[in-house]
Length: 259
Image 1 (cartoon, rainbow, N blue to C red):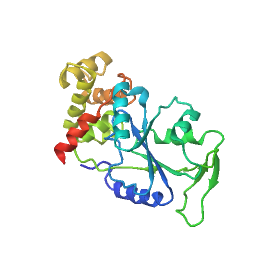
Image 2: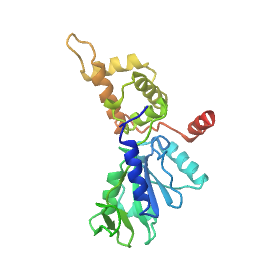
Image 3: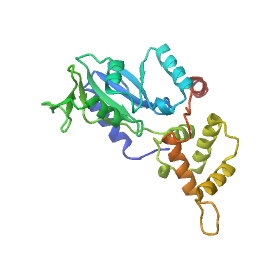
Image 4: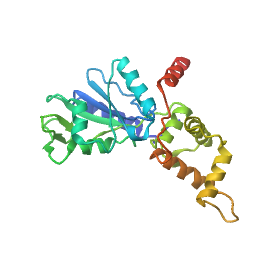
């Protein structure tokens, strides 16, 4: 199952070019699904990697703590953030060396553009393109000399199972209108139902939600398509509470089963 077919390989080639220009990778992930939103297909050998768990303000707090412990136990550098966190606090957490050249990347809707804009701040200065590097690549410099690529690595991925697609849908990284398999909506809802403690089955939940929101067709029947789209949009932006859709134990069990 591919998402944005035709763009995946092109994006990977672009990322490989950009990685040659940096010594540090800031990988932005959604704190609600840190495995699903990881850069599965990219190799960072020789680069310092910082995993930035974003959107912790709409993730389950205890689950986020488990993920931080999990990554640190596995030797990873991991920090957390959210859109309201002050720039100074984020920079302090990242502890970027003045010689760092940083590429920020992540799958769509993890908030990488917001992170880049926050890093830029009002005082960051553009330093322009460098001779002999990819045309159009622009850097900006932070106060302490850290340099960051102005153009983020746009990372698309191959979706290798329906469970992964379902979790990407829940965090908004996989657009609703890109899904042509109805089963993914059902799997996504089951994940949400379990994590949110909802008892209603798929059909009943969306029937009730459609009626409550007035999303009806002529004749008074629920417009399922509009209801489903609205629901998953609201879940993605955190309107249904602080919920995480993965925890380390589940992912470790999944990997052992598939490995």
